[in-house]
Amino acid sequence: MTEKALPAKVRLLPLLVLVIAVAVWYVLSLLHVFPQSVFPSPLAVAKGLGEEVSTGRLMDDLVASLFRVTTGFIIAVALGVPTGLWLGHHVRSRFALLPAINFFRSLSPLAWIPFAILWFGIGDIPAIFLIFMACFFPIVVATVSAVSSIPSIYFRVARDYRFSGLELLTKVTLPAIAPQVITSLRVTAGLAWLVVVAAEMIAGRDGLGFAIWDARNGLRMDLLVAGMIVIGVIGVVIDRILIRLTRIRSVRWGYER
Amino acid sequence: MKDNPLRIEDGAVNFGSVEVFRHLSLEIARGEFVAVVGPSGCGKTTLLNLLSGFLKPSSGRVVCSGRVRMVYQHDSLFPWQTAAQNIALGLRDLSSEAERERQLKGMLRLINLEEFAGHYPHQLSGGMRQRVELARALAGDTDILLLDEPFSSLDYLTRLRLRRELARMLEELPRTVVLVTHDIEEAAQLADRILVLSDRPARICRELHVRLSRPREATHPEVVETVHYVLAELGLEQDKENRIVTSLSQ
Image (tube, rainbow over all chains, first blue to last red; front, top):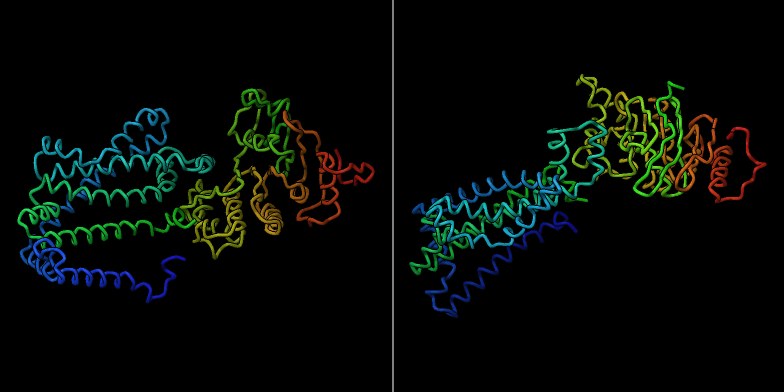
């Protein structure tokens, strides 16, 4: 059964889960299972969130984080997809480079943090660098695998109908890999969002990651939770935006059959 | 005849040590419908690849004069394009936009899929998809149509329906056709000439002419008789030499 077929009442279930979760949280905070200083109540967090919004700090941090994620992600896509296309078509280069790419893909981007700071200092650039390192390699691998799984019949047909050069790329190869590449973009965008928080905690002076680190240092657990909530919500929003790409009519075939 | 659009002169094809064809000679006349049947793996598709120029002969000569289009077994439509966009691929070479539009409408009408023009292949049934494939291959100015088991993935009734449609389409848009099939009834129902290939290395072990006009019923006595004759040639039925009808000749 697809989600669309669910009755309207059932579709309210996620909201119910949210309400229950907040209620449990509230009860736990009332019971003082943990001291209030390390287990803020929902009300305290809501107040803290309001404070962050009204001072404008939340917006500044949000913009800083989103700028880094978007920039790093776009650079990774702009370089990763062409690299994947190239490796997908050239067996020898693929054979030579794929082990190295898999090596870097398996390396946690956070391992680069010391170098990111030493090379680029503090601020936007180290974070962008880390996001790039997190996204580039998975995008390359996903694109390579998408290209090499294009049924050869499509190239045969393309030859029959005299596609060549740039047209072959834009009218056959790219549309053929689009569904798989879009799926990998969703995964890597999520990864980018995870990485930016970690990067800002260590190599930042602003951004949501820095905000929760700062809250922790100031023992403001209410602000820390508020930051966590915003990070989670934005992560979901980013995925919702990217999932729209899968609704483009000319890529639906990749998800429906 | 020099004017025959498809010719193989003493062609041979080897894949490594596997000899697919040896001393193969074949002429196909303009407008002729030739079906190629034979045991599985005997090189029927290789023959089509040879004719389309996709494969070069190891020795001998292949002449193919005219523009060739191929229809594959299944799933060769671009899934990211609608039925109409797929058919329009066949009209790419027409320079006039208006003419392309006009011919596209005509093709959609011809295959009775006007309502499905905006549908993507995965939204169409198997039979509809093969009709779109046929339309794509027949669209525009082409001369030669190579069909590689085009209906083999369809159920029997849809196959019968599509054979009739193909005959009707060829009446409107005459082409030189080579049909490779394992469906002997299909060959008997559609072809002017049936070539029976032997096991590898394949040679043409029999040529049958069917002079009945198209469209033909699958149950027409001559079609049934042709089927029998081909099956006998392939060693799958007892040869009833004395029952060969006049329309069949070697």
